[in-house]
Length: 310
Length: 248
Image (cartoon, rainbow over all chains, first blue to last red; front, top):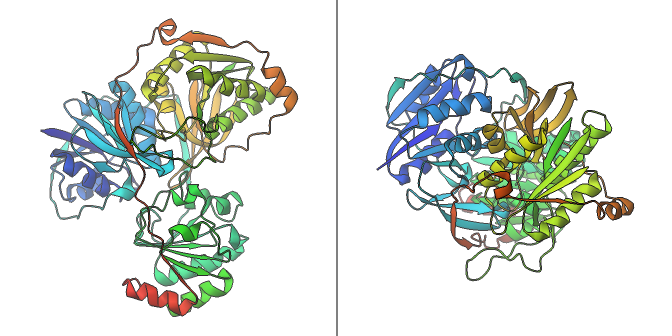
């Protein structure tokens, strides 16, 4: 029987939506699923985690060293709690990717990055080469540490009521790392990684001002907004909007790629979208190879028309 | 002050990946290889820090078979002052690489380790963090901006929520993200000069490192392909197609 520890990501007292997807990956492994909340005051996060279907217990380790997400402080706490667990899972976000390998190295075990399917307690699928190949791997004896590719799993429902237990860890904040702050893009729009609909713009937008076409359309249909690497590199929008291999990997029900040619690195980020709509003036653009619905033409006339008709 | 940069030889990012029909892996024979693009960014950052006088020496280190020497030559052409080849045939997993790099870091008495955030073959994104853990050093992953004053590095990290700033004391590990810099084009004289610089060869045994337990690859398959969709001619047809799928 497995005993699985899921490390919760959270910010400003709220559980990250990705954690419900990690629980969905943990459930088929079979066994107890515990969520670990590392915070200065984790009460509200723990209460949210306790509701996730499939969670059997929530552990809250309140400690001043957990006040900011510093890997060098969080990893020792995870290692301390991980004794007796067969699996330690993290969301495949920048948070999980930062902390998980530090935990694996301390435990002396290898890590599986981006688990996209669970076959058994020791057999998993993961993408390599930006998703251009999938490997099935077998993990060795010892604790299995992994990050979970969120786009591959559907969030569990918030229908549970697990017990919440306080645990203490001996971690003392390392003096060598100082958190100086986060410059976040505040937005009222749906979060790019969990939105059911996403509208992304590419290089063809031509400027930061022209991106208004994308934002307006997204707001009309209640969608999150993304961008191609080319649009980010050109400075039209900030980096946290980038969709693709080196940005965010997403799986919305409906994805609009507008003025995006469809470089391999962008396609790697949208492979799991259910329906892809592409609008591009170049009929030969590679995006049309993967789009479910394609429309060739000038985005600056087509998108406002689509906005009016949807 | 010494910096170490790890560089990996990978299938070039422009190559279209082919999975072998027997499921034993991807085709790498007769395929163009080059330095992992994130490692090029790490190398460029080290060279810029040296140009600014923040560091004095750059040691490039790689791990793998004989062909990896090409990648070290590229690192030397960028401006590495020394190159170390950890000779190891076969597949190398991140924990073993991290152990080897940790041994080199200690032996060289370095102050900074810069790695690419991930290699574009296994997409693991682990080695830098594992190395930092093994040496109990601070880490700043996904670096989009690095500045060093004395013994302190200020790193702007590209995280999901935006841009996070960390201040870390050296010695430390930094992993390079895409927008940290744009690597320079290598000039022919530098490439020629790099060919004459001797490369130090060591083995895991020389470093006193044992390979970690490995994750075993059972099979490799191509991803499920998306079937080609329909082309519509007008916005009205597009809206109708979305309605047919229950999406509008």
